[in-house]
Length: 605
Figure 1: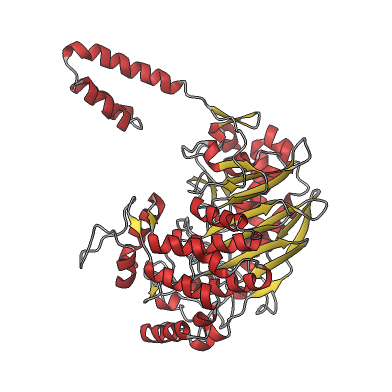
Figure 2: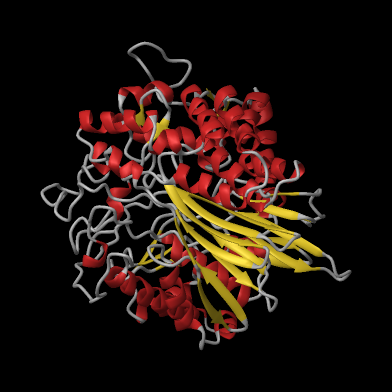
C-alpha cells in the first residue's frame, strides 16, 4: 500500500493537495504515521531546494530567470573553434558536420537552415523565407530572401474579410501565400560563398526527412492546434503513424515523422539548385496548383523572384558597434530603441531603482514600436514615410514559431539568421507531391491601415499590399562587433512582435549590465509595443514595490509568458589569450548549443 502512495507522490508533486489524501487513503492504519512523516520530510526537502544557480563563479537568483526546468549545462555551452546556437540540436549538429568536413560558416548555415526546414515544419521551411547576416573575411553582408507579394496582390484584397476569424484569407489558405524565397536565398548564398558541394550540405536534412525523427512536444502541440485548418494532403503527412484511413489523427509526442516528399525536394535542390522551383517543373506545378485553388502566385512571380543583397545597418551603442538588417526587417527600430537608452544609467537603475529601469526600457520600446507602426515597410516601395494614424487593438496570443540560429567561428566569421513561414504551419497548405509547407506571409502586410495582423501589430500605408513588395517583418538578426570589426556577439530570436524587445533586452543585459550569456538570455523580460497600452511581463519579474511604482507611473501590467526565444553566441578571450565561444539556446525553447570541443565545466546547482 505504501509503495502505491509513494509512486503517486512523485507523479503529482505539482499539487500537494492531490497526493496527500491518496497516500493516506492507500495506507493501512499501521503505515499512516510513517506516510504522513514521509510527506512532511518531502515538503521540508522541497523547501530546501536551492533558490540560486552558480554560473562561471557567480550566483544568480532563480526567481529572476526563466529556465523551465532545464539544467544550465543543457542550454549553455562553451567550446573552442566555433559555436552554434539554434532551436534544434540535430540542426546544430548538421552545421557541425560541415565544419568537420572542411566547410566554412556559410556551409554550416545552409545545412542548419535545411535541417530546420525538416525538424521544425511548424516554424520554417522551403515554402518560406528569411533574413541572414553574414560576416565573412572581414566583410558584413545582409541577405533578404523573404517572401514577396504576388503581382496580382493589391492593397484592398483582404479588406472585406474579418481578420478576427480563424479562417481569415490573409492567414489561412491559398490566398495567404506569398512567393517563397528560402530555396532561392540558400542557393544564392551558397553560390557566392559556399565551399562544399550542395549535395553534401543537404545530406543531413535529406536523412532527417527520409529516415524520420522523433516528434517532440512542441511539434505535437503545434500539429494538434493547426490540425482542423490543414488540407487533407497536409494531414496525411503530419498524422500519427498510429492512425490510418479516414480517421487520421495529429502527430503525438514520440511518433516518428517521415517526410518522403520533402526529401525528394531537398534532393532535387542538391542536384539542380533553385531552377526547378522557380523556372522548371516544380514552378509549373505550383502555378497550376495555385490557379486551381484560388491562390495568386503565377509562373511569372516565381521566374522573377530575386534575392536582395545589401549593406547592413550599423550604429554605435556605448563603445560597441551594432550591426543589423535594414528594412523591411525591424533592425532599424531596434537601433531607435538603443539610441533612446544610450544616455540612461541602466546599470545603476537596475541595481537601485528597478521601476525606473523598466520604465526606461518600456519608453524606448514604445518609441521604437510607434516608429515601426508608422514607417515600417519595404523601402523600395516607400516614397514618403509619412505618419499614419493607427487604432488601438487587442493583442492576440503570441506565436512561438519562426526560428533563428547564430554562429561564430575562430576565423572571425559569423552568421545570424532568422527564417520563417510566418504563423504556425504557415497557410496550413502543402505543395502536393513535394512536401513543402507553404507560408502565410501575406498576413504580415497591413491588411488595412490601423487593422492588426495575427501578432496584434498595426501598420501604416508604408506596409500596404502591392505586387512584388516584401512585407515588414519583426525578424531582427544582430551582430555586435569589437574594435577590429570582428563579431563578438551574434544573436536573434523568433517570436513575432516580441522579437525586437527580446533582442533589445539581451543586448542591454550583455552590454549595460555585464551579465553572463546564459543570464542575458534567461533573465525575465518585459514587452511594450505602443498598441495596446499594456506592459506585458513574465510572471514574478517585479517585486511588489516595483510593481506598485510602475502602476503609479501609469502602466497597465499583464503577466504572461513571453515566447520569443533568443539564440546567442559570444566570443571572448580567456586568460591564455585564446578564444572561447559561449552559446546559449534560450531555455524557453527546445535547442541546445553545439561547439567543436567538449563543453568546459560549468558549475550547476
